[in-house]
Image (tube, rainbow, N blue to C red; front, side):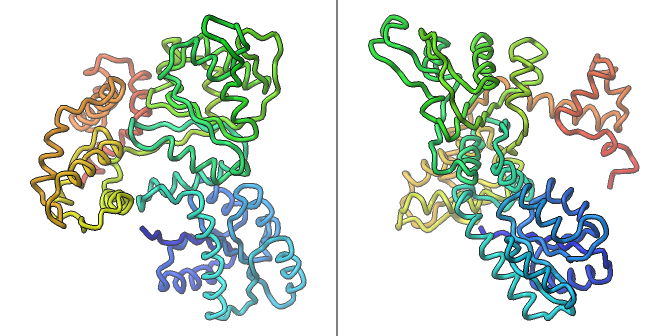
Length: 443
């Protein structure tokens, strides 16, 4: 689904900001305005931006310095500089450094819009190359993808969280594609799928004879991913004894194969994912705190499918197109409404299953509501993981409790039989603000 481009205007002339903003909004662009280079950098660090249009002359960080900092923060983000006639030599020098173009004041409307279209076209080409398999028009997801693209440019470790079935590995692959390591291997492993001794061998390798059955040398996934990205899925399932060895490998940037006395240098970027609450696991000594902070330099949380229900029609169309079934044209309006309204405890993984079921049973070009109802009913016994089920219960419980007490935390904590500090931590864990339940904030 085509997304509305996000343009950031930067100028200390408020009246010009207002004029340009109105002009761009009439062209159906999403426009945000800030009045300084410092504010622009703060905005880019938090929000998705497709194009920056900045004045050259500003107090504090000027347009050229802003461009340089943007290149460090988010390489590839296009920048257009606006300049007065007297500053044209500097603007020309800026284009030689990588600024997309410069526009002279007073602004010529046609030239301005033409330059924006060309810059966004280049952004779009880069955009599609790394996120082509991620289908969304959800604001929270777009913000998340903007952050993902930004951190992809560096080598920092990223922890991806979210319920099972939301596409954590898909996001990890997208980060790899957007990174400077994209021409090197992307290697993934599920840390909960193997017993401890086999997982250690898979990660670090082993020498011949290291254990019973080790009839030959095994390289290991760290070395297989050398120069590229290693994705550790379900990192919360990793045994604590192996967590120590992983931490050492990350700190020393070298691995020691099982049964070997020699360590081997390795260069990998680590991405990891979990549906567990690792903070809670740390409190119960099931996950090492030092490893957690090593893995979570940046944390990206994928929303559940229920939280981005507006994406369901586009996801269904993507799945249909991927199946290349020319006989099936789509879903009836009633069918689509039923899909949108479903709770989806299994998230996108469950949606894929439902689409495949209805496609297999469809006898008409338009899939009727009866088939969707049948597919959903067959999955009525779908059980989320224990962790996901507990989290959902806690979230619903806290919302009901805060509604009942009208946002009075002390009363809510008393009913829950928790001390106030612990209760505040629970509210923070689920992003629940007490003020939203106050009587004066309702309606």
